Length: 181
Image (cartoon, rainbow, N blue to C red; front, side):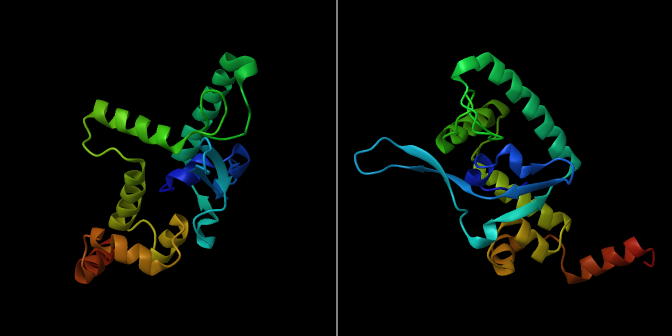
């Protein structure tokens, strides 16, 4: 989906519209440390005004989310009275907010097991954006909006080098798709 780490960790089940095929990004989870205080996790406003958005998701994403919801119900039963229901899609095994550092460690561990050299959650965002651009699945302006960028320029300047086709190649491909080449 290309969400930022904090955005994904802040999604509640109420933000997931299974019937409409949409996910509402309403905030971001942050780890904060006050003066002489233990670190705390809080859900605050998103990174930018444009990060507050509704994303259309594929059917495959909702299949995964339904499985996650069922797995979460099992974890809730196992946790019993220790479960603290915050309604999050990606909580700890006790229903609480997941520390972004723990997500980072889990991704690193899974990457090592799979033999992937660079395993950071933000690379999933980069990968999603680059693959969508490369495949031409969405126009730049829609992709920019989907990713919560403040402008199309951010999307195209940061990820534009992923576009494999030049102007002529793109037009030739379009002509082929129309059946006139």
